[in-house]
Length: 543
Image (cartoon, rainbow, N blue to C red; front, side):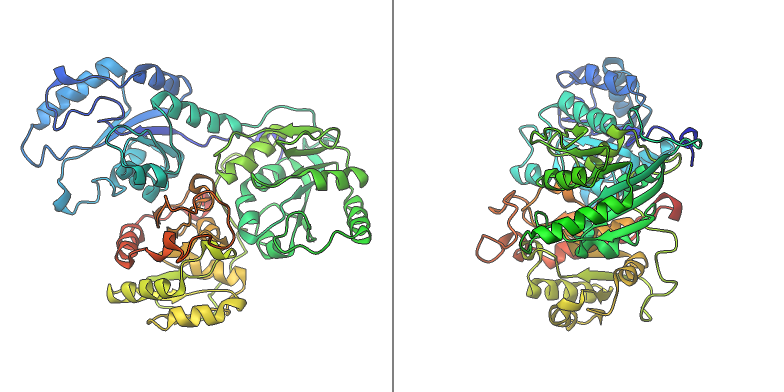
């Protein structure tokens, strides 16, 4: 792949906006164009989106039509007035139904978002959605779109807590969308040892930590691979299996880093000297250190300097001195996938033409067949988590399995080799038990064939995103949902987003009874599965 074959990466093609309370003041069941009042700063904010080349659409519930409170002609007159005041929109998508009609378009169902994306010739995953209530955010997530909540006086506190991104007003929401778009745009910077084919030499990419952390760095690694001759990935033992599934990786080095691993061994001089020698043997022309927002790249940067790597880049809030050639800064709250992509972009690496900034596995990574014969149309429940605070209690997981079985779903329970006792307990409620029987590649194969996956904030959630399978996210709020949610895949979040453990980064639940997930209603999970299981799957090459 030559430099000429690469293109500027775009996160979004379109921005879809709720009407009442977001674009214009909320006048209940309004059919009078004279009552249309734009929200403060709306015209200027929309014009900025238009100037950035983003198409605009409106997605709005209008149950007043079903209730006979105004006519279609009245509504169209209101929309004409909106465009007089705010400029043209590329599509208007309206749900005319009432709550009890059982349609697939009334938010929080994702139908309006999906219809708007089709009308604009794009995919929901390439759309941002701005709204003022929880229904807007649920509809966006269920379609695979990125949601931003702009609260008003009617927005409930729990809706604000559950939102992936919150803005103070429409102008701020637009700022955030454009900032995210800009962050991953590859810059033009001097490159070391660029060959005749336009590619750089050997690049060492580093992502230590768990399988999920390695998976969410995949798009950034693909971006680097699109502009380099050879990619060497340094990861820890917990991330090795995930690294082996990633496109673009030519060689993998497994090494535990004691400043990253959650149960670290002591720092020993002999081990560090051995690591320095191994890094020097790579012969890297450049190194990119990918980290989570709470980790420091500087210990490894020092070792890379001692190994003779001539250029080192990383995201660092701490002053790096001469340890880094490129010190990149990223605003708080950026999704971890985009955070990593922004570092690659800052060094001048962008995704190849046609590649989307979504999680993806090697084309030949999945086994041709799952490890056992499985029924068609099943739902996976994965009860375990790499961090105990993020795991749903076993009895509640068993209750969820029972509720899904009673609702007519075939259920498969999965888990790692050290989770067999847990998965056996959960699977006893009436499901196929695969606990401890799958490698990570086998698990990917099982998830890829599932209608939906019910899972906490752990590696298999990101593995499901990588194979394009919708996720019911049992998300404990110990870390920010907007940063760690399964990326660009249809999902529904369940759990108490405002629990007292919020943003504590606790590895063991600090609240008696684990209320954020112990209180999940199994019926809510069944409803979420029903909402997601019929969602269209993206083509293989676009996942």
